[in-house]
Amino acid sequence: MQVEFIREGKIIKFLFWNIYKKNLIAPIIQVITENKVDICAFAECDILDANSILFQLKNLGEDWKLIEIMPKGNLKLFSRQKINISVIKEEKHFSCYRVRNEEKTWLLNLVHLSSPYQTEEIARNMRAQNVSDVIRKIEEEVFGEDEFKSIIVGDFNLQPYSQGVAGVLGFNATMSVSNARRNYRKIDGEKRYFYFNPMWKLMGDNKLVQGTYYSDKDQQDLSMFWYSFDEVLIRPYFIEKFNWEYFDVIERTNDYTFIDRNKINKIVYSDHLPLKFEII
Image 1: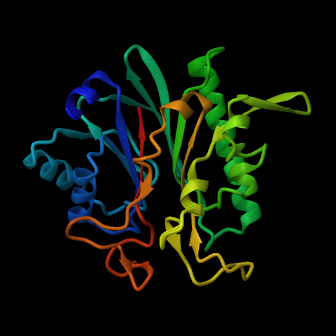
Image 2 (image 1 turned 90 degrees about the vertical axis):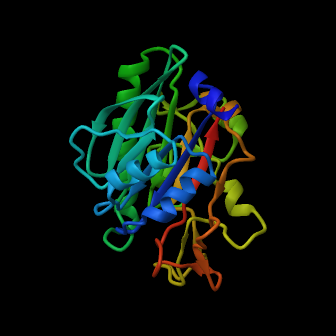
């Protein structure tokens, strides 16, 4: 039944994982297959053996493809062969893809923004604003006067409440469904279109993992520990199509556990955890 849904374009399951410059072939294969993922994206994947990913999925009876033209950065996107997806733009910290199904077109954007180890938060917010502006221009070209149908997923290296993510000059991503459904707010007479950010739900859950990244240290000496640097932002069009039951941070597979002593096991795996979500 799941395969038929994919062919009809009714359900697509997504995965994003910053793999910390490691060739995590076996864990990746298990994450994909156990969660029945349809589109997966990776950051810090400079040494990832894409051909091995495709070959092993093929051996498991799953037909996948790598979507790229001439990638300039360290983002990679894979999808099932049946999904109609093509590259619009590829940059060092950002890539944009056009997805078509049932005569509808929507945009999937991947981001891997500047690291806190290299760039102060003020600068990271400004760079997030620049990427937000680029994506909006692409939306205007693709959708014209129609409603924007865009998803952004990736490692923002910013918390959901940061200026770069929640700020009106950034991605303008709100935790409020009711406000997101207004579609936009006007600032100085200019429309600033909303994204809805579902990551707040995972941050508030009463469980061990409350983000995708763990650190004992903070630049401002805050006792945060768990950070939601990896996020998915959706335009209001997708709010009713977002599956809250599937949405989660992945802590383990059948054979691999990414948590050790209440922290992310970055020695064996990545310093980030995979993030999954589903659009119906």
